[in-house]
Image 1 (cartoon, one colour):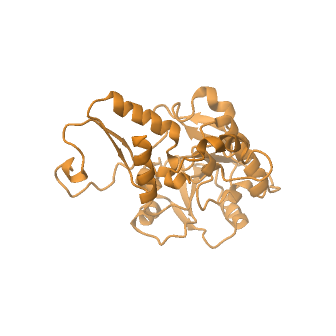
Image 2 (cartoon, one colour):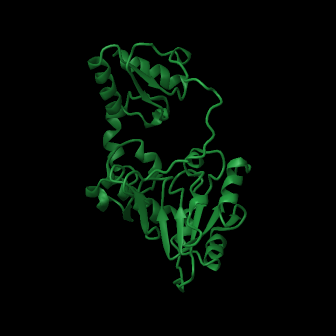
Image 3 (cartoon, one colour):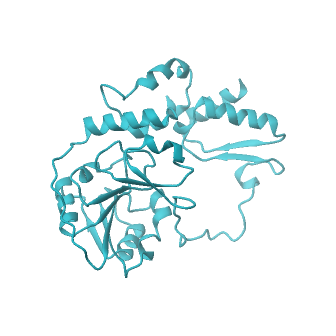
Length: 294
């Protein structure tokens, strides 16, 4: 019902949501993040999910030998035209090649495109691991002497967390694709900033938090700009010319009654303001309009 913003049973479900996935059957930690904002319970859910759904492997220590360059490997199923690549597109190429040798391990099911080619040309070694097992992928990384493995997926769709449960590298890091905790024993660090993980919330993560100084989110500075030379007008978007526009382009499943009420109260306080949302589906559009008129 969250996809359609049908909140008729939301209050009745709050107690169930608080208990869901913490004991007994595990649920996807990602799906639960849409339902409530409680880092402590998210950690418990992630731990339960990792314990029940990810095969915790008996691994062998990785022998660490000093070498001239640090080998860093990025693992993702989204090395194609995807929101992640809109952010990461120029990251791989700008590593200091005097200090790092950069690998990309791709396991996406999508057909390779220009974004894939940009990754392949931006790293030293590009490996297609779609057709090998998680154990084989971990062993490949070990054989290539990866020092730092960076998982760009977390518990997002089509992840391969099992690769990291086999311990692909001495240091394993969660970055960008899933800003929640893995609740695992195999991911050592998570890269964040003090907005996405406030310092007082560090204990709600199984990983050690590595803070970037400003924002944890990189962006591709080489993205092609629109061919349109002028700004898109409000009229073209169906927006009023002289109104303040509040905007949220998240999918409808990420909107809950609590947030929506805040938005409605803002609209009431700011004269001639409008709320511009992405229409995920016609049911969500109808239900949000009905909720606004209540």
